[in-house]
Amino acid sequence: MTTHSHDHNQELQDKKNNNNNKPAIQRDRTYWKSFDDLNDTPEFNQALQTEFMSSPLREETENEGQDKWARREFLKLMGASLALTTAAGCIRRPVQKIVPYVKQPEDVTIGMSNWYTSTYFDGQEGFGLLVKSREGRPVHIQGNPEHPLNKGAISSRAQASLLGLYDPERLQGPKRNLLNEKRTNKETIAVNWESLDNKIVEELKKGSIYLLSGNISSPATQAVIDDFGKAFGSQHIVWEPLANDEVMLGQLASYGNAAVPSYRFDKAQTIVSIDADFLGSWLTPVAFTRQFSAGRKKIETMNRLISFDSTYSLTAANADMRFKIKPSQQLTVVMGLISEVLGRSSYAANESVKSAVAPFKNAAEQLKIPSDVFKKIADELFKNAGESLVVAGGLQTKTEDSHQLQIAVNFLNTILGNEGKTVLSQKANNRLTADYNKLQLLINDMKDKKVKTLIIYRSNPLYALSENAGFAEALKKVETVVYIGDKMDETAKLCHYVATDNHALETWGDAEFAQGVYSVHQPLIRTMYDTRSFQLTLMTWAYLANL
Image 1: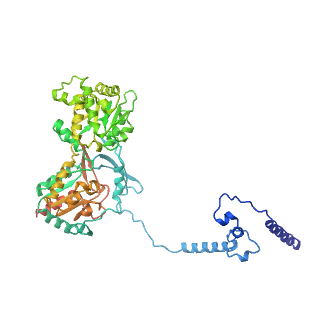
Image 2: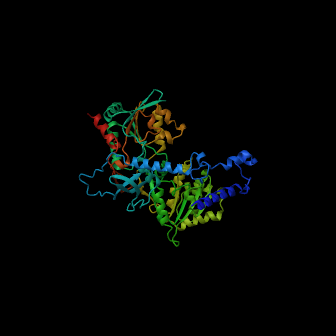
Image 3: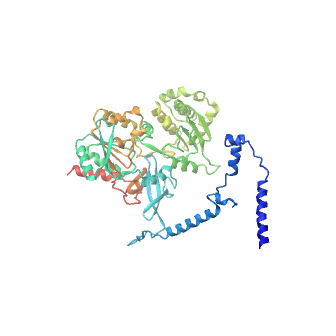
């Protein structure tokens, strides 16, 4: 035993001597953390040797007692921590029980999802939906493959609409904004529905009522608005930031019907787009994309897209031929194509048409496009007469010639025989009636103090309009402004009353996204807060006014 102990002590001493006699490590001075490190000072070397001396996992030495945290001390602390953790886990928590259904609905299975059909309208485009609901709560939205328009496709806005239902910033009841005379400051207070209804009805009885909203896709909602107008003599103004009033005016001048026609890209072999981003943002891009892609599945019969655009867009990116133009050259493109097509067709053009087309015989030269290429485009349009389509629209076309541009496009489609085949004016979407001109008339009436009560339904003109439009200043001259929506947005903040609306997934309704195509809008959840639908709000005010 003594010999063994002596040998062991000797072995430890030799090991210690070997550690002290280790050769100095040559360190790379390319990278350094301090000037002492760079200069290799004695102080830095001393600190380097004792850098990890306080580690609880270091090797034990004879000087272990000098170190505050040795390995054995570390193990003691860890053992005590585990013991305390175990003791803490033994504390009795409050008992929480999951209460089952007293009478479980037949169509609800715990852990299983149900799917319901509904609709969505974003002011421009409508969709048939399939909404996934789990135990009474909607959790996912996707397109309905059985709907004749979107056929299962859906936009990101429609999918994101579900987030608005659970938005923490969503209003949970009626509000009143206490504004000063200049309406430069406010204090928002909560009110009850009875108080809000009585005060608003008093203002409605004074007359001069205007209702501002976006496009209304629901025939039932439009009927409620019309009945409200008959009861109070109110005027309904329809406006959208992406209004297509130039298309409506072109249809009115050409065919006597102020409506946005229905386009069939799936039946067109040759498509010419003049700044109309129909695959990205113009009109109903989701439905148009489905139609356009349907015409490109077979190489033998694949359609051909030619884009004349002043801004690179999704449609331009997918075009077979793309030509860059200026916004001022949009009318030149259409009139140049008319001039080329008239020379090939048997259409009997009168003298007024000939004189209007004459300045555009050299349109290719004005557009800096090879004349043979421009003529081939016209040849292709004429070859596919009745199976071609020319469209123009979008923000880039809102120039001084926008009205004339749409008339020219309609004329070109007519002489090509596209009217009634790829352009369906008789089956137009009568729900897209937004008009900037009507909004300007409303602003003028507000400035002249002809509007005593203005009701704004889910529209935010203070955000979408420029300051030059004068809406903000005109709003200050209206005696009573009522906002119906579920967000305290820029417009709602400057209104006297906020009649909080339901979320779309909490309301019954209907929709007509195309003439003769009706869809049912059904709620997926009971009203979560103290809110009320727009339709019921108007009917309530009309009822109280007649008491």
